[in-house]
Image 1 (tube, rainbow, N blue to C red):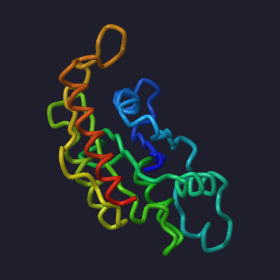
Image 2 (image 1 turned 30 degrees about the vertical axis):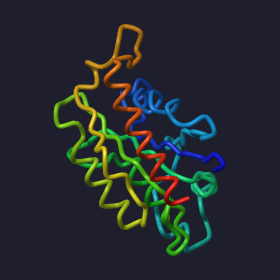
Image 3 (image 1 turned 30 degrees about the horizontal axis):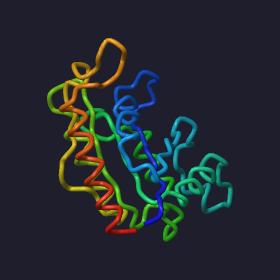
Length: 185
């Protein structure tokens, strides 16, 4: 099987984001022929259907849609904001799902890792995101469930996640996701 392009969408824009750290820790765990691409969401304009209807599609949407069309599967790494998905991540889903009938998400395997400094581990965001992915027709990894709580306690003095058990769990997540990708691609 040829390599795959994995798009990573991180729901936190913070430069020292725990979510970005987790995503960067997961990335090298994919097989060597898988290409992991971090997709920037910072400059993605808010979705407004008028722009599609009036053929005034912002350049950021065009770039995002084109990029996502070249992606074979998507890894979502997200914090929880007010028991739900961060706006930047939901906006990316909306921009990519339009115009109607031209969704960049259709049939692309997905995995969700929610990350939190608290004990609930982003459960609400994880499950709200699953609702959207179901509607977008994205087969989503069910097991293992990936809720990373108390993330600050997993980071060593060098700003890395090096705990052997955590890294083994991360590898389990990636291996299961790769198996899902192989089933659908």
